[in-house]
Length: 148
Image 1 (tube, rainbow, N blue to C red):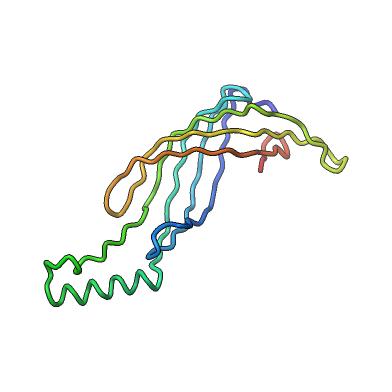
Image 2: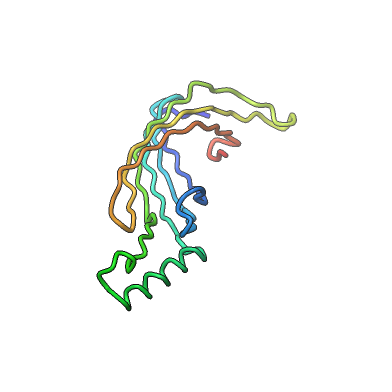
């Protein structure tokens, strides 16, 4: 698999965990990376968030509506629930480990282990916020044009 001066496109799906107990969030996104070499790549990532209130979130809005009916200026008249709308990132990745796998004697698959750093903006219901990303991962190239 020759990654010199090559583009890579892909998609992702994820569920947020450990965040706000009032909202469940599912993310659907896409990315575009440009590999300068098999080791270095830069990329952009975009992800849209689909949000749904939990039963606790519904209760929070119910209490806020009731408080608004009594005193619209009361602090209790605002639900205070924030949620992500979308995220855009610029990334840099480095793959220090690259190799080949023999898959059940049916063919050779290339793999890499990489690190990734990113910076971008997350658009929240309450406004924009800077966001940072760091990660490690691995990819297995099953053909010249398809990887996991």
